[in-house]
Image 1: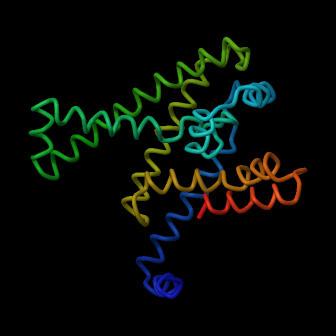
Image 2: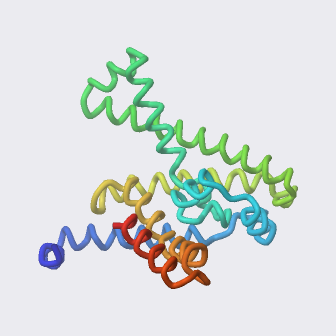
Length: 219
């Protein structure tokens, strides 16, 4: 595998695609650290520290920790994934969309365009819900309500654009790569949490067993 990867760098076109993908991933991780204007970061951290659960941890993993920090990529690409699923279902239910899908490349482009518009609409709805919900908790600066909504919507749309550009000019499926890099970025903090919860301060036998179980699950 390493030999194949090494040989890939000898091909200029593949080397450019890998480099482009890598640069896009850097942009994603930088954006995940940029705070949303109008959000009180201290309140956000305290709020999430007191309100954790499986659903929260799963969504936070998909966003690469952006949701927990309420960064500009807090919505991640979940609106795009949702809109893609909706379009697949609608294509089966609505004859017009089914015909459009059978038109070949032109039909596919039309469906992709509709999916993009639907993504922006869903991102707008989700950002409004988040802004209202967090605003009532006192986590937002009131006069920046509109900025928060626009920032979160634009962040999700930008991630969708990055995913499409990676698919077009980079390596692999862009949307999948965005999801993978977000999940991978959570591994260090997740391992730290597991260590503190199941290993730190435990008897040697219990700690060793916990380590074996954690490694087995990961493998």
